[in-house]
Image (cartoon, rainbow, N blue to C red; front, side, top):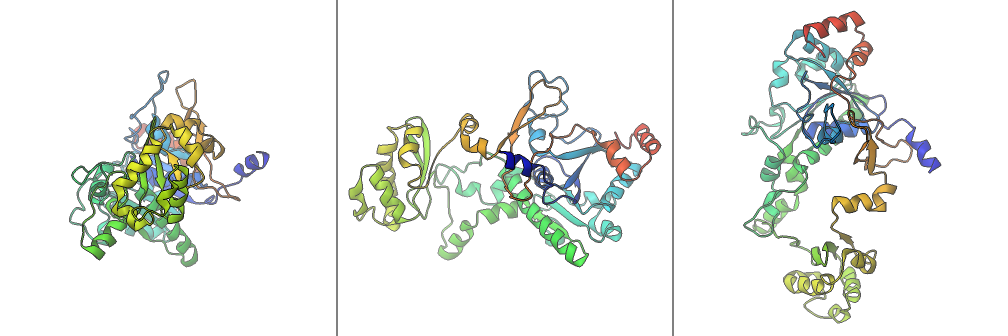
Length: 412
């Protein structure tokens, strides 16, 4: 534990990178939070009213301040906030000056907004040629290929629908289902983060930045990769298949007496172990079960056979007899996640201050573990405009100039 605490005091791997964050909602903020988690100085530019997720709950019952709720807290930690009115000349000038001193700018406005503000990539690179400009939109930026849907607004549910994920998710072929968390935002955020870091690496070698364009729909299609090759190779269009897999069996969810568990036997060796565990060793040699190909053809029989064992036992009992022998995991509720020692020892439930509340809250931790330069949650999400003076003073503005801008409504 002493060694672990020592490591967390080290600067992150991205220490020294300056990021101007013009994003809101989920996709953009999740991307910039990853950069912040690993040491980048992320300055979040907000309107005078703040990011649209600030008023979204949940809130603690005793939180009388209500500067932000759980949504904003979860995806904006480790950032500094400055509130700027981009509809004013002074506000745009402030943002331009901050970007001139930055390595990265990230935005998720609809196409054309930054151009109208005079903050297009082409304008910005005139004074900051090393700038890496990242953008995430529903259907991408016209610079990379103008989608016929380029002007359509998009959220997570749209990306999941048009990217193909809903088309293969659901209880049956006629019932597509939305994935629970906002993966239509978070997956593009991860892709954008990778692209930005690749561009930063290139900029350090060449001295030239570049435009990094991510479409939410493209990213969902990319992670649904098998629907492309399945259709191309076979001509058959994949459809929802419930809790099963079209190519492997058993591979999916199985009923327990108190919920469900997941079991995945990709290789026949795993099947042989599972057959033994469930007390059916004779199935190892049975032609209907012996190979993965045979099990796929007899999927319902396989599922029925396994559930005859799993449905009479609790998730904990199944973990004791199956866990560690074949790929297995109980379907957890959030309450079970909070009580599992795995997430505690991996620092995946992090306690942070909640302004306005007498007690702290917990948010998801940093999943990327690095031995020498670990990422970490250094501080809670910022209150609106909490760092306006600090950021502007650091950019070279005098205190009297900041006060004048505040009086005229250019900043808060």
